[in-house]
Image (cartoon, rainbow, N blue to C red):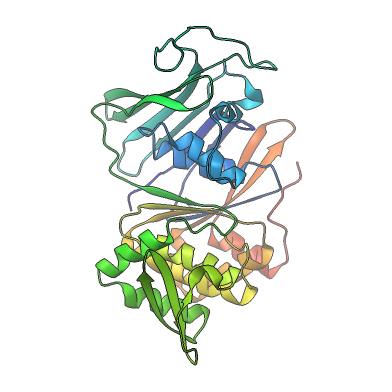
Length: 358
């Protein structure tokens, strides 16, 4: 499996320092609100998109449930909004290559961005900045290559200049699925699957959700689903929240162009009767297409359905890791790891895993 073996995060959003080791194919994060679950997904997404300076704003837009994000909101990636302490994310991959990313915010004179060259102070403690830098290193053995991507805005916050890292091309692609019902990439995922003669795969997965579904098509850039007994196909956008959520997840997991799937609050909008079917589908697709998955949840019920699915599919047990994230008083952010056996024991004996009181 190609993917990440670990991750280390410093000064990223609310996380001062967090190390998580021994990732597997499917990795599930638990924890209380504000324990850092979504932050870990965002850090992984950014580490997979280091050469694209648009990604931080895109991630902020996803978190805010808005079509776009203001440039100044990038300061919220900096812990306590302290731009002098840059956020850093690093990881070692399964192929031995290491990645390290450091964000920076600064003011740089640019005639396109600020013809008058008159930086002013923002309200609060953050000075006027117009440039985001993404400085990153790729280390393979003893050789380290350094790169930089950046973008610059004018005083109104509009991007007027940007540059991707020269000489670097990201070979892998990650996709972040937020906790709400956004389906921005659904048509693209399904188009790619249909082009590769994989429509039957998606249809079989949809039948696990609702056996009345007997067809799916892309018509004028919209997704349509047919049901037994209905005279016309329905646009996916008018179907139930649960079906749209389920379809978005399995279509991304099945898309061969995506190497890593990041799913925030996987159970959001889904009925409990779907949980085991969804876990079965995700493990099957991840193994078949050699993907790595990172998932967050608050639901004990979905964890126990996952445990039952793994009990019935022994070969998947080795591909699973569970981490409870906790912000402790003495050690700061910590990640506590369990394998399948720990999950099984917890579900059997009604042991709480979503929070560890320290």
